[in-house]
Amino acid sequence: MHNIHLELSQVGISFPTPKGPFCALQDVNLKIKQGEFVSLIGHSGCGKSTVLNIVAGLYQATTGGVILKGREVTEPGPERAVVFQNHSLLPWLSAYQNIELAVKRVFGRQKSRAEMRDWIEHNLQLVQMGHAMHKKPDEISGGMKQRVGIARALAMEPQVLLMDEPFGALDALTRAHLQDSLMDIQADLGNTVIMITHDVDEAVLLSDRIVMMSNGPAATIGEILDVDLPRPRDRLALADNVDYNHYRSAVLRFLYEKQKKVEPIGSKRDAPSTRKADAHHAA
Amino acid sequence: MNSAIAVKQKWQSLRFGKTELQALSKAVLIPIAGLLIFLGIWHLGAQQVDTSLGQFPGPAEVHEQWNNLLAEHTAENDREAAFYERQQARNEKKLAANPDAEVRWREFNRRPTFFDQITTSLVTVMTGFLLATAIAIPVGICIGLSNTVYRALNPIIQIFKPVSPLAWLPLVTMVVSAVYVSDDPMLAKSFITSVVTVTLCCLWPTMINTAVGVASLNQDLQNVSRVLRLGWFTHVKTIVLPSAIPMMFTGLRLSLGIAWMVLIAAEMLAQNPGLGKFVWDEFQNGSSNSLGRICVAVLMIGFIGFLLDRALLLLQSWVNWDKTAVVR
Ligand SMILES: Nc1ncnc2c1ncn2[C@@H]1O[C@H](COP(=O)(O)OP(=O)(O)OP(=O)(O)O)[C@@H](O)[C@H]1O
Ligand SMILES: [Mg+2]
Image (cartoon, rainbow over the protein chains, first blue to last red):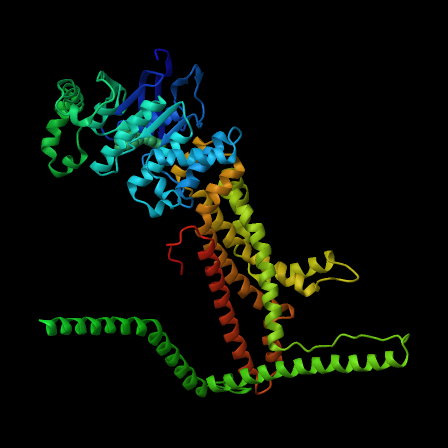
């Protein structure tokens, strides 16, 4: 449990834009242990997805790098499965076939046909999608699509599970339900997880550590909060827990006091007050 | 109370009947009205035009010529059947008299009727179109996938795309007669010339649309493919092709439309058998029936073009994964 599984060291990235390079991230340093659940939280546009994409290998860091089990990450691969922000299922394949594509790619040589079928069905059961496995993405709800996306990532048995706002587009009930199943699954399988979220409660409930990012450009890690709550965690019991509320307010304070976001919509509506806020932010 | 409900139900059923009527009139009555108005204008307009071959044919004369063409076709069929019957009888008689006799079997020298020409044109256009598709789709995929290939081929495509079939035809004719030499040709030279001309002209829309469809592949799906590290072949088969299908069919439909238009022009110019030659022959013939017969051909060409497009639409709705997509 104590060995470093995944390490981001001095990671920085700048995107080429017509107005010259745009430095999105700078000096991101993070060490993650085997089996740890880490949440990334921060204001919209600060660079959370970019961090995740660098770990996934979809973006190449301009400076620094990512090391997984002592090896540098240079390209995407199935050992770092991604649950995308918008599920990203292939619309022409059924839920089953979407997962099959991933499973065939990862276990094509090790498992027999029957084993693969069992494994795919097992993963669909895990997210309670067994009843609709032969439906196309267009025929199932948003929450169901997201569940299939999660099942696809889990079925690859990744060393690291990367999730970009996996429950962002869901209603509160479905979200709570999926959070509980994710906690169960992670307790069973012990994957290392990095999850991006906008939801403070979700971050505190699920994580071992919460990584809070400062605003961009040149965003970096502002604070890291260790969440030392016993597992298994129960959302109802935690609601009145003193520690839980302490962690919650720590994250809220970071987001709304230390990293106060200047809303671009407000600047259009009443410019003078925004200028004041700007000055406050700079100070 | 009861009667109130009954009245309400009656009212609802009446209303339902009304909307149904509206739907019916939209689907059937309005198109029929349009057609009738067109026929009326045609009929009146034709009477105003006097050509050197007589009055321009109206709908009635054209219908008469259609019947004539049908009758000619049946007559030719009968002639052919009779010819083979006579030949059969003659040869059997010969063999009965002398089992070792040498009998000759000859082919009937059929004069191609209007409907024979239609068949010829259809076979030619489908051959040219399939050949073009077989070239255009793979090349389009390569262009869409690779920027380098795109840059290399783009100038060539842009230059050849606007070339009219009339410009290709002399070149194709000369090249075919130079290259395609055989003592016992399986396919007629004129057939090859038409096919190649059609192919050259209808290659481009499919190629360009396939390339655009492939290149506009959703970034998220591309990321899925990268995370899974799919091989090139699997990537193309499971991700690129399905997502490019709608654009591909847009291109195919444009191509088939062009192929059909080009074919008629090519047949007319090069005297290749087919509908185009039929029109040209009638024009040269210059009898009082010619204009009516040409009108039949024009309507037939349009109708077949329409059917070809519908067939492709049907194929699209069958192949496309998105069954809810509206295809028109
Ligand atoms: N490919 C790119 N080219 C140029 N700039 C980019 C690119 N990708 C991201 N950026 C910029 O980098 C910054 C961080 O973007 P990112 O998508 O990581 O934000 P985020 O924290 O995930 O936001 P959200 O919570 O809204 O998803 C943004 O300012 C964005 O404009
Ligand atoms: Mg994001």
